[in-house]
Image: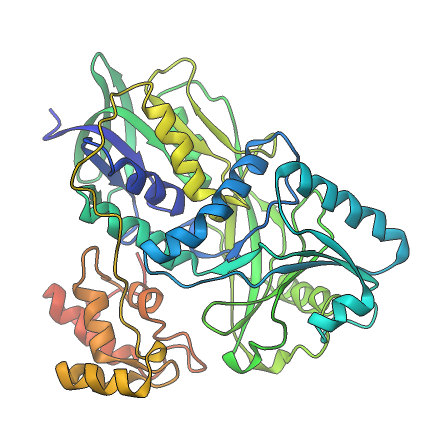
Length: 468
């Protein structure tokens, strides 16, 4: 028999699952989040374009269109409540000939129908006035001022930490192997045991179809779409100020060029549908494509300052829209599937949408002691000289530099390891603090961080993992 009964079991600790957990933590519900990885945001959510999309691309009337715009509008408040970096830097969709201007006008009209504000089609001269490094062939652009950039991991972690502070349980390194329907709800079987819940929310990314089929008839299929990226050093971060898109196709929004909230420059992604839902390798052809196509929209990109390349998988549903609904055949099973771009933007709105579905299954009583705010890790790089000096005076560990490339101290790394849902791997520390994200990619700081992780967990250096 399951050891503990929950009202809600959420499968998947990506941005959708963690956003839903945080939203449900506002109510008198017992909630558990189950994920096979050792940290949150280890799947689809960790490797994407980090864009808060304005909402002009999605077809009017779709869930993507509705939840994109609603999620975008929530980001200013959430970034303050959850203490995460968020910049409304705006975006340009560029075209290369007069023949393509009608396509920009079509995107503008679509955006207006979706409720996007401030859209404007610019001439080449108007576009160059705000982005001097646009390629010489750029003819015009659609300007979207409400577009922004965020750190996907910081957003996911903030949702998770705030949910945890409000009573949500997390069971990580705990892969789900089966779900069975019972008279009282469900029993979820996983590596660490069984969990009983009245409601199961499937937020399993590229594996959402597999999780669904454990308890109900297959009704949708998820295809993994691999996207490859190139990340450039912070010295290249000012190449553009806005996010520069190319005209979208049926495969996505094309190769973009964008600054990141950490000051780097990001190029990508490619779009290749693959059978292997674990294949996040980068390829010579993929990276060559990113390089060649990014040059079509932006010139003077310093490709010699690339510090790493990576790929991520997008969870693409058959009909191209989000699948967010209670299953018709198995009541109490809620799918949040096909959450590809603009899933990151839509996550807070998806959480509200799912909350309303849960409210039709379980009574929702607001929790009187809900804590809406969360304090992130104090990063030295964001402090003034005076603030750094005061912090080091209070805690000398902040004066011991571990990652010289990104200027990350021992104090920051200790906080990343010791805080609620703390890091247990090198990548976990990296995503919380920025350590290992500089030019040397962890070549010098990794041994010290590994020693701190080993000490905290009571394990040997040989047992410390890079990731889950």
